[in-house]
Length: 286
Image (cartoon, rainbow, N blue to C red; front, top):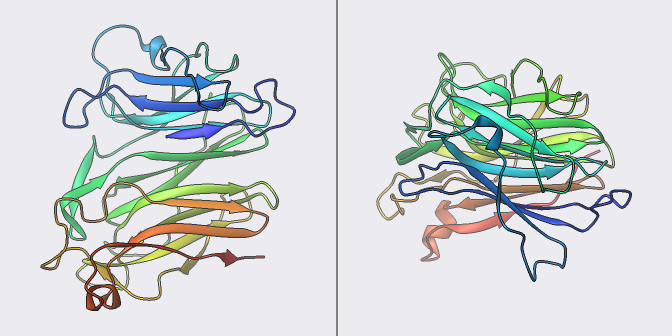
């Protein structure tokens, strides 16, 4: 994943950061690496391991997500499947070096699980994060004991050293699945927005409606709305079963406009002779 320091008061303003895991097959990685550019991406720095403080030996880094706070501190979160947790580390010198690794939350799953809507590819555990001022927010997906695969949120007000107890983003009962989430914060109104595929409208949990959870009180409570206007089923004949929904979707939020982007295979798409298509919707939310 990629992020840019857009904070004009930061001494690293305009710096581009790229984070990835140096996987060696089957999405199984070792160190989590970060590189940066100070010339608009023309050249990149030598990669540095954000996991260096963990020392030698095997590491399990997957799903890196970099983001920057208002003072220019770079944070990177990832799934540490070796230790079954969502982890993060930060850099105060523009990505040159990284401090200790902190735990955002433990995970029930190590890496992924098969759910009815993602019955071939599987739903993957990974974080998505953002910052409003000095407050950090991270969401992630994980299996639950009684509520299916779900989306959780935690926040930190001390630079990522400690994190609040994890909170479910949705409040549905039963074993409905919410997966392939992504988070975006809107600094204009301090809202936290998390979009995901949702199966709660289908008792079999096979069809999804892309949906949005939104908090305007720092993640204490969330309102919910369905974004997609028609359901999608990626388990039927003709669907790309090897990929289904994939692993990630996207969302942006700025000046009161929330814009999720997702993959959709509704009946009208199939009737037009198409397969999966990319949809978006601009949501003007007070």
